[in-house]
Length: 299
Image 1 (tube, one colour):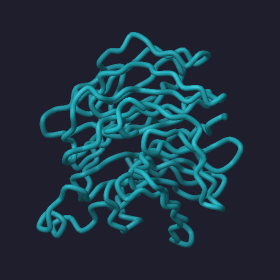
Image 2 (cartoon, helix red, strand yellow):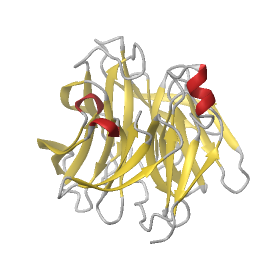
Image 3 (cartoon, rainbow, N blue to C red):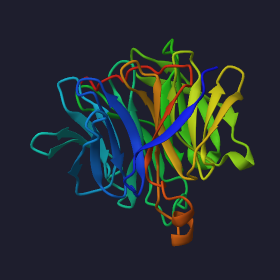
Image 4 (cartoon, rainbow, N blue to C red):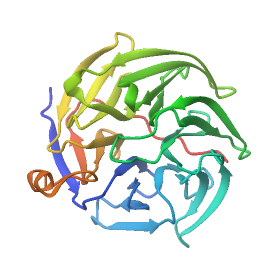
């Protein structure tokens, strides 16, 4: 085993850092600050950070095949043009629920953009229950709702054979699997893969590695756990120097670096003083596994 190294590569104190996506075209890490209402790009070579401010919360960013990005902002799927910093709405959801917002999202292996909603937080992880749903934005910008009664729609990814989708509704403390039809984008047969232990915290963002194992960030648990979805067991735990670990994604030239975002919202001054890197972004190397390049939205 190579030795695992954890470094805080981005020291900005984001309120709710999320959705780390490696952009191979630019050689940069793209991510969002949900409460800070911005999409950012970090260049590891120059250490420069660029950002685009949005008018609403922005909870997920994904690559777009035609260039630039798509985002889930407020309750709108939108296109983001980086150069002129413009945001063009593609589709809206939950129009009957003005207190809702999008949360985590990801593009499936066929190029559809999935993102789920939740009620706006009263305090971190305190929400009106059952208000969220999971949606897909198709290539033609039509939207399909998969299911509702979600508390906090969170991490998503797909199995290597594309026959299963993994999904987290945070307040259930579970990672679930659903049968997945990659031709149509339809989901069915939802079931539990793993239930988090008390000390592991709240399951948040998630990604898969080339061995088909899931990396799940544990909010308030200060760790990332690696789950074997077949066995339903944790096979590795990596602890971080911050409690509010929010999401993860592989990146770097060969996708062997795991980037982990974190949050500082909901921490008092004493807690922030104890964890000066809260809200920063961490790079974990030496895990001995690689991730899968993100798929770009096809529309």
